[in-house]
Image (tube, rainbow, N blue to C red; front, side, top):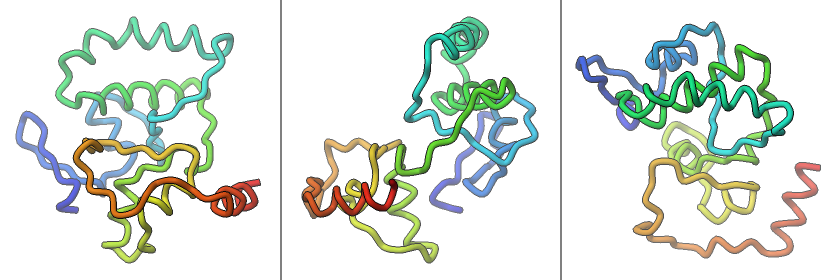
Length: 156
């Protein structure tokens, strides 16, 4: 919990153990759900999603600029509206693997993986919240042909 603890402007403390509904409530949204939509990678069809995206922009853009949740407000709004309007289809986690979560997972009993292993097991490796320019990489992130074949065979 300490790794993900943060406070709002009123001094209330929160951590990563919050429920999905609590996550949306921090942005002033009420949604009975178990799912937080990560908007790091989105695939959209303009014909199906264009109108909804324009409505989202016009409805929330001004509040987004000053909301204390920053990019989490934008992510919450998109997740809220896409779930409420039944526009979300959830891809397997390999399509937007968040490096931070997987690298920290080992501290709570999960498997230990290198960045290279994470990269080779995903289509997109998302470094949310990290300045990758200063990361000291111990292993090259290039995947071998064998890595690619193993990944494709596993996800096919």
